[in-house]
Amino acid sequence: MTAPFDGHILESPFRIVFISKFIYNMHHIVLMRSGILKLPYKKFVRYDFFSSLIWIAIVGGLGYFSGVSFNLVKRNLKFAEFALLGGLAIFLLLEFAVVKLGLKKKL
View 1 (tube, rainbow, N blue to C red):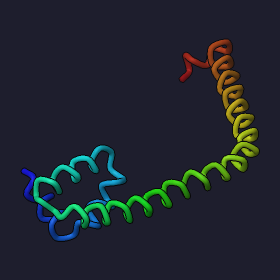
View 2 (cartoon, one colour; view 1 turned 45 degrees about the vertical axis):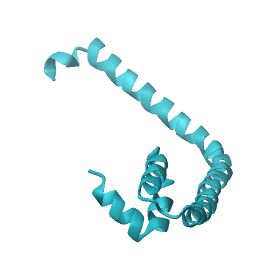
View 3 (cartoon, one colour; view 1 turned 60 degrees about the vertical axis):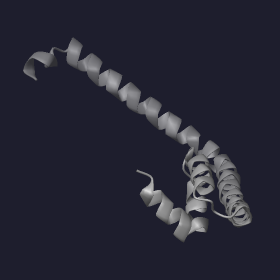
């Protein structure tokens, strides 16, 4: 069952360690399988260190830029709130008209 992972761990350990950083709980499985397959410890630590640096840069950059863009979204969110409120008011008026004016029977 783990044969496909074993091949990837032995053939391209940096790539599998790097990809496993982005998949929840997968890094622990790769860590354990690397130990079982007796991947050299120094080699694994080196791959893990560099993939961690890249992962931190990607996730940190996404966090930073999404925080910066939040200010833009916050300003424009007012208009979306008013649009939703207007849509709800129109829907309620149409519903009132259908019920009160007896248009329900004609539909």
